[in-house]
Image 1 (tube, rainbow, N blue to C red):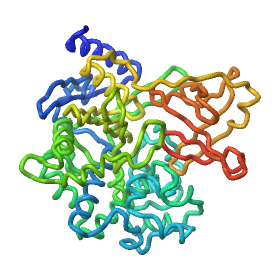
Image 2: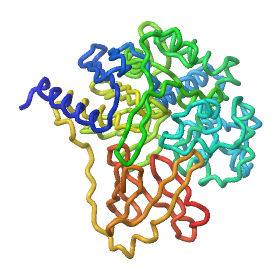
Image 3: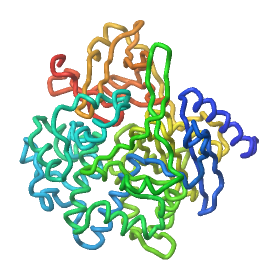
Length: 475
């Protein structure tokens, strides 16, 4: 049997190859088991030009890993009797509504936490970070179309709720019926925390989560970055005929009205302290952050969004990951690709942070976890059988699917196979069954499903955990 030292050597070569392929400037990764560091490694630099090293206290963005912090805050307020996750949102935000007011009134906090409110991906998050985007020349090279944003910035909670209320869209279904990953849901949770606690969202998280866990290098305020020497530089990718060019793009983005969706900055050491709280039934040292029952509610597989993959509260859950439970979440934003995970039955926790968007942080993390568990780095926990589909049966899937968040998914037939067209070339899709395909997203295999309306016509695609609507002139 291959020993673990040899397996981690294999992982490090695997990681170097991936990092070189994707031109990732800097990556930091570490794992603990039973509160002891069992692996730590830095690849590249936090600033390439100056060759500044990465360590476990280097500050990175964590993007959507922030969402579980938002859910911890909600669970704390539930423990205090200030709300219930099963309360309707309008109980705390009477100004929350969509064009379908009756359905909107039935959306609960639980629906927001599990991305099952029925809200489709709309442009709220684009306008929440508009001031950053408009200042940043690199925004044009981001993977989403963000620079075409003619409406006013959404700076306040009131503006956020007003924006959602005036948008003309249909909810994806009854609240609780349809899963579609939603930054809007988490922006709304941030407002609830603000209204119910009497503190700003950022102050509440700082006082009740970050400080008690002693996450001393974690914060939301960009002004704090100016005081920190050991922070990564951000980078951006630019595609051209010659290939991919990665360049320094130092401006950090902010979204003051939606920080609850993904704007915490943190470090490897701080995130591992946070994950230890889940492994220790809600305790961080001598400080109780959550009751054990609240921890269990957060990591419960509330909704299956893909075969074998579930969403809890701000966390994803795979109940059978090589025979054990795997709780995880990633994040992506300009200059950020992050991933964290825990194997609670084994007392293992880990985190990976990097300084470039749209790179396979999860693949790198899983490669390291495989090494720690004695597997080869590319080992997958799940395999899907695929089959060929006659070309004439593929035409119904063709089309352009556009989300309000700036994502455009173009599906066409290339060389007799269905494919998603990307800046780097066609991404072939293989049929698993019916309307379910498997493709590659950020160098990882992902399930992609085409969804139909009541008339049986394809009108949405489930891609990147979101239900994205087919362009109206093609439905």
